[in-house]
Image (tube, rainbow, N blue to C red; front, side, top):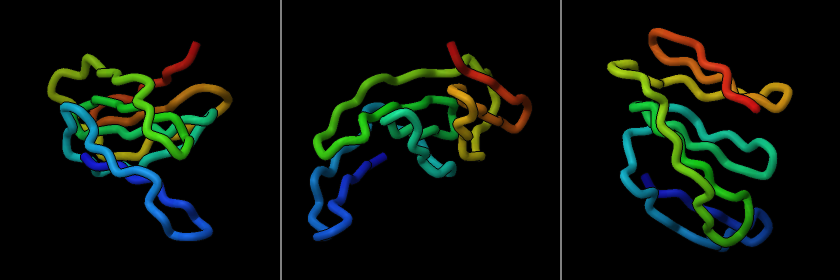
Length: 93
């Protein structure tokens, strides 16, 4: 549940923050539309601004019941595709 931002040129850590109410994470984080998405196994998704200072933009939860989320989300045409062990979700405007 700890996220890091590192300067790619120098290796200097810009920030190190613990996500609130963090879950286990099997999925890889993804970058889309200037945001980094961290999807927990319990269906809770943390959205962090992709910038050198930590800013938690949102925490979203899928009403998934007993589903488990191990797969990494995919960004496609302005939508997020999220797969659990039982369903495929498409989230967009």
